Amino acid sequence: MAQTINFEYEGEQYTLEFTRASIKQMESTGFTIADLSRKPATSWPVFFSGAFLVHHRKLKEEKIREIYKHMVDKDRLMEKLTEMYYEALSTLMDDPDENDSKKIVW
Image: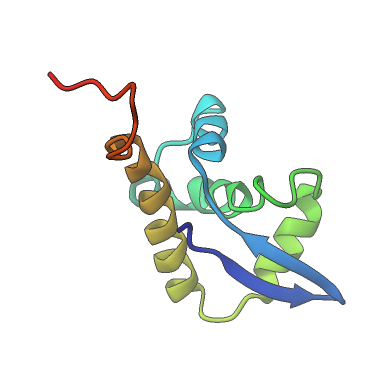
C-alpha cells in the first residue's frame, strides 16, 4: 500500500503521495533523485512539488512554496518523501500476482 503524508493548511486537506505515474512525470521534466544531494537548492522544491501531483495536480507552485515554508521538521519531511518515492519506484519490480494467468516465467 502506498504511503502518504496528510495535513491541513488554511482549512484545506492535503495528501502527498508518489506513484509510478507521478515519478514518470517528474522525470520527464528533468528531475532525478540523485540531484537531491548534488543540487539541493533546485531539486528539493521540485521534489516537494512532485508529491502534490497525485492528489493536487492543479495546485499552483506559489501555494506549494507557501505550504513548504510553513512545514515543520523539514529534515524528517524530506526523509519521509524520499522513502515514499523509493517505495513507489520499487513497484516497477513487483512480480505479477500468483493467480495471473498471463504471467510469464522465463
